[in-house]
Image (cartoon, rainbow, N blue to C red; front, side):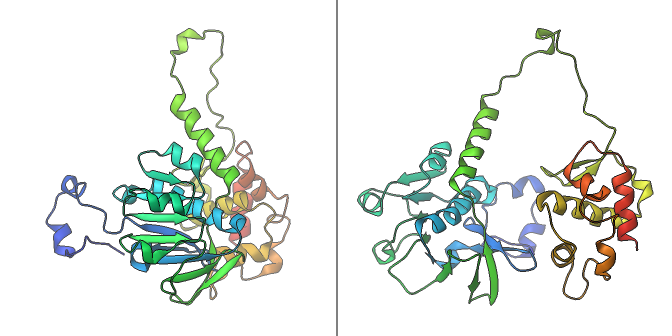
Length: 306
């Protein structure tokens, strides 16, 4: 799907050079991930289009949903043009992104301030009717029946307008603090010449076993791609990443999450749990370690080609 700025069409993009497109404003700056559907597909919505999203649940249940939205709005390139205000949560998150966020401890403090008219994420009940100029409001309770109402107390919630069940994206406070600590350490890191530390031996990255990289383009490295059919390498990489991120996943879960209703990952579940593919197999070890031998890749190929 291609999104065009308001009032423009495909001919608009065709008439511009790549460098000129850098100056075109994002068409949906309030676009954010809500969660994923039962098939693990991301569900993204334009908060400005919805207007109001009410989150039902306790503070402990609502705040992780709000934090996930806040961090995505802070790090998405298309959201740079929209003001975001956090109310009643996320003080350290706002402090780490001073150019992107404003923070208020309560709705009363927000109401008394000259806050920008952008997106408001509030962990407290919010009177939408008193702030009609806002682009969007996501809050733990609102004074309007319009918009969406999502149940943050359950693992998944039904979005009536879309007709789908969605597992909400969450980021708890501890995870947010880990992100802040990691980003702060990276920003404060100092590059020093290697000559300043002559006694520290240089150890290049090991190239003796498969390496699965998840940051940036997902890929398997230090493997021989000639030993795998070209059309299978992407699927095997997807399987390795899934096993790494979902330790202990069963064969049925793998088939359900990586396949579709009409084309499951494994057509024969009894083979999916064979020694070559079950817990403790070479493929499982490949996904959870970057220092194994290439036998894990070969075992995964044997499992997939049955």
